[in-house]
Length: 154
Image 1 (cartoon, helix red, strand yellow):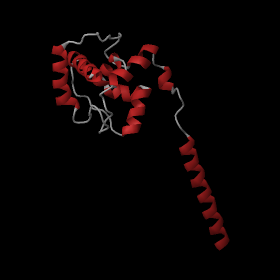
Image 2 (image 1 turned 90 degrees about the horizontal axis):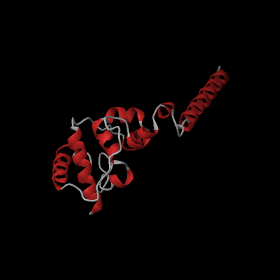
Image 3 (image 1 turned 30 degrees about the vertical axis):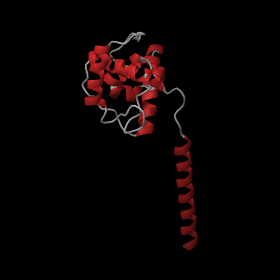
């Protein structure tokens, strides 16, 4: 009986090890099936209501910057700092890394972005926190981008 119990123990140990190795080695591929569904514009600029590129002007709009600062402080600063990691990623140089349309789509459509966009999925995996929908208007999302652009230029 003892020999049979020992063999069963070895079998289950090997089974557990192989399952763990399989799970650890089962990383996402570079392009998941969901990524394949995204158009080139969506991969670069995100998924959401912003469907055309947005250009930041050389001279930013002071009124939009002020409104963006207000909205950022009210809706974003609970999870994001400008220059350091917090609950979410730092946003002080986000306009140097992501397009204005991407920033707006992430702001306006965080759930679908996390579900379908590879960059947003990676951020979710890194920070282990889902960005919540803050019910920000498209106009206010654009103002946030203007504020973040101004911060990046300081």
